[in-house]
Image (cartoon, rainbow, N blue to C red; front, side, top):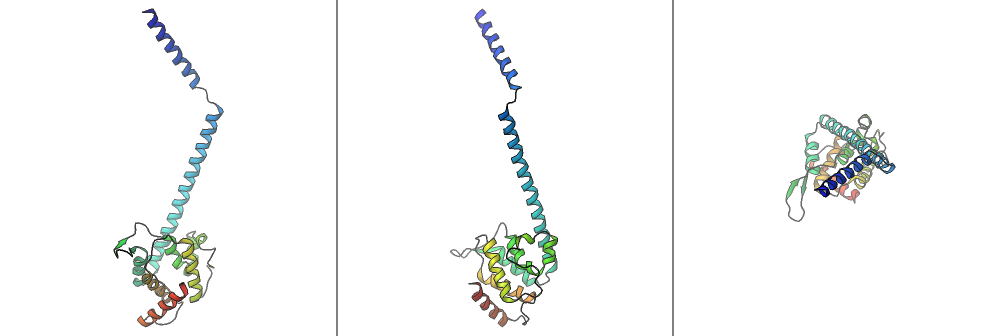
Length: 197
């Protein structure tokens, strides 16, 4: 019985030693806590920045939907960027997310003030002069090539739908003054195919 009691006393003493030592904080613990705090602060800042950018992108897209009255363009944007057809199975499906920056980029040269208002100029300023008064067909196509090479997300886009969207944009925003007819669309699509290669 005395041996059993001494074991309990030793155990209590060992527990006391651990409790005394647990109140001490060493330099390594402080550095680890500071590093963890710095990492969490960085992640928090990134989340705030992303949220702000997403709000700006959403606001610009809402502006586009209100401003563009041509239903053919809206329908063409939907067909080009939301619907994907598998080339092997020929089955169409809807994308879970869209490439917002590319969609905005197609219209960016026509709305430089709004891009500035929504803090989106940084996406395009490297390869687009956003103060175009009159944009030529050739300048717009060069711009689209640069936009695609910088922001393409490797999701295949139907070539004919893309050409149709570009033709509608070129006509709607006055890059071409010709009347929108089926013959003009075929002609402009052929020109686009040659220039986009």
